[in-house]
Image (cartoon, rainbow, N blue to C red; front, side, top):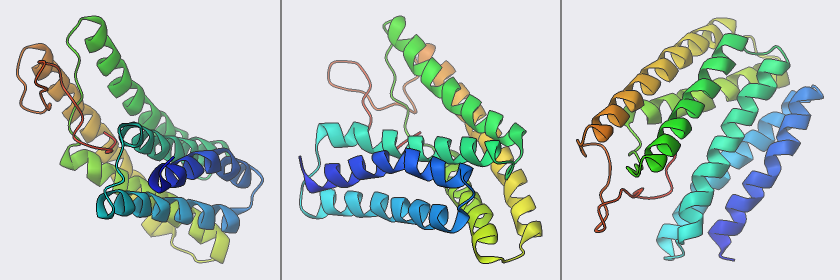
Length: 197
């Protein structure tokens, strides 16, 4: 196992520990675990590129670990009553929509691997920022309620926007337009790297 894959696997293993910390009302420790997980994401990508340690399994494992951490963070924060339930539902529904579209395409023998869109990257950044602010406010006693409220609504808006953008991309793919997918030599589509949608 390469070092980047080991780091990615460690991040994936940290997910249930993070969830327990949130549910057990340990926001400070949860904050640092989440921050460490985020830094590890940057580290494994840098090491893989710098030392040519990229691998096919890493390209798939990395986005899975990233998505598992964010979904777990949103669900656990929602269960703890720290973020609105509608936002949790919207975030999870968006991911299920993307997964369902990819699976459905595969079942129809029209496999698709959609490129990460700008709005999706902005949504991910907003989600990470929201989790850090929610945990940080409770961990360090900093009052930023207005900022937290703005982040909630901004995250919700970007979640809906990215879901709509991916739906349009998928519909175009199903109609034969390959604009937002990466074609393979065999005619299928391939992800360009370890980036989550």
